[in-house]
Length: 137
Image (cartoon, rainbow, N blue to C red; front, side):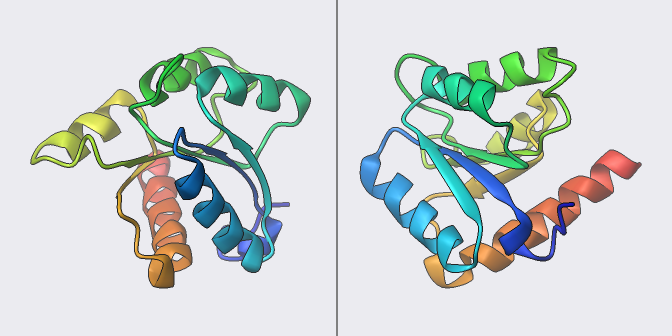
């Protein structure tokens, strides 16, 4: 059972085309005990999900091959996968109004890069709590 306050119960899929970002996000979450899987784009992410369904997905929005927007559509269209919380992590969509656009598209949360690693875990917990509150309404 996933305890959204305890990262050690999470299986996180990180979808990020920048290897350095993937590594930092993964190491940070692993430090807190999370099981982490990574993918460089949405196509790789879908292959990983077919192997094992994560409890949460963190995805960049602007990536080659399949971006985060298209990944979201695939996941939300699949009745077996639409329940997975998906958080957008982006630098490209950090302008006024982008947060609203991301959430209206169906993402459960929105984080702007560069992410402050010292507070990354707390921000994820808070974002998940907010997303769960929005879904309950």
